[in-house]
Amino acid sequence: MIDRFIHMFEIVAAEGHGSVWTVLLIGFLFGAIIQWARVDKFEKIAGFAMLEDMTVPKMLFFAIGVASIGLFIMIEAGWAHYHVKPVMLGGLVVGGVLFGIAMAIFGKCPGTGPVSLAEGRIDVLVGAVGGVFGGLFFTLAWPWIEPLMGPDLGRPTLSSLFERLGPVVILLYGIALIAVAFALPEREYLDPADEEESVAPDADSFAIMTPSPRRSSCRSKPTESLSS
Image (cartoon, rainbow, N blue to C red; front, side, top):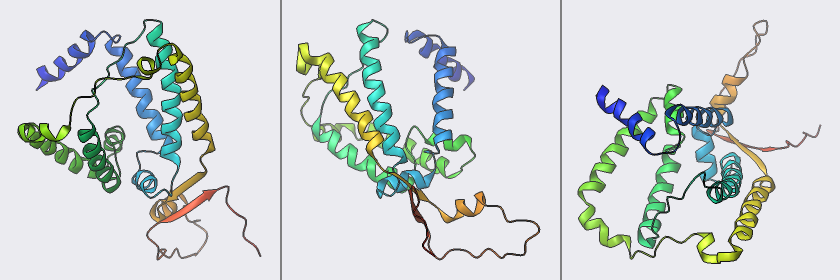
């Protein structure tokens, strides 16, 4: 087990993406940002699926927009290279539907799951076990699944599709995504349990906190003032 763990770091070091310490630093920053933005919380993912929380889409649009421009510059400078996957419409459609349903029910995604696990959330372990068995099923059933993937449509990129206009299109694409991130409303989906935990009762008061009959609530920012 220890040998396999060490071998994992050896594989990372042999990929040519930088030192192991650089990869660990990037991973640490990624996890810290995820935890700080609270997008590893169930209500964030579930609220996104119900379009009642815009934290996740705002973060995704902004990150993809910045990464699109930054990655293109790095590739042109020779500091990075693409790992483009083939376009198979059948696999993309079926896989996207399954992934979206599971993400909404589980309230986690492959990026936020490990962060939640580091916080001590045991429910993530159940999803991890399910993922292992799902991967095993996919591997064993691949001969029957492969025909459903559809034809290989190649590995197109914006640069290859627009050729000379590629840099301009990528720049406009990134700016558009960043603009969408800022244009989305600041809407937050809150769970009453989290609200009660964040508001501690005063020790000198005798107020009794009664649970809310609603299981969840939706709050939009800025909040509207209550009329007297």
